[in-house]
Image (cartoon, rainbow, N blue to C red; front, side, top):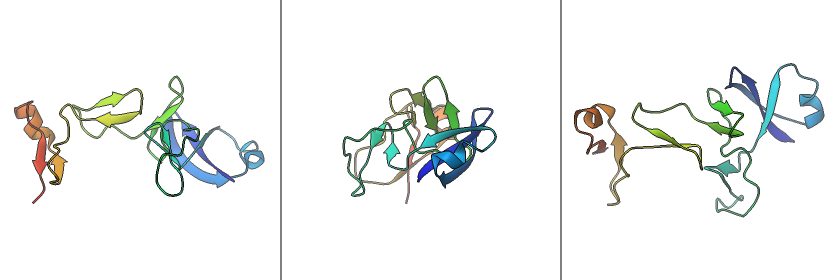
Length: 123
């Protein structure tokens, strides 16, 4: 069995587990996806990269975009200032996440007021 995403107007509307011969009988556009793929990397059951084939950059979810040119799935854009990394098809903040072992969340309003800021510590 494999995972398949139904695509309507470039958006994922359904994700199912099925055999290819079943999917072939369904109406619409269906594209295979793999829950072992994230950021263009294939992961094994132990959660570590295993060198397997990364299928379509990311596992599909309802509401995700399917880009047929990139042959990739990606999440909805989380914030206006973020950009899509074409290698991983993951959204990247315009400022790197702080590397100080604290927890942060992105605040778009803070970034828009001062584009050298954006990550706000979670207390």
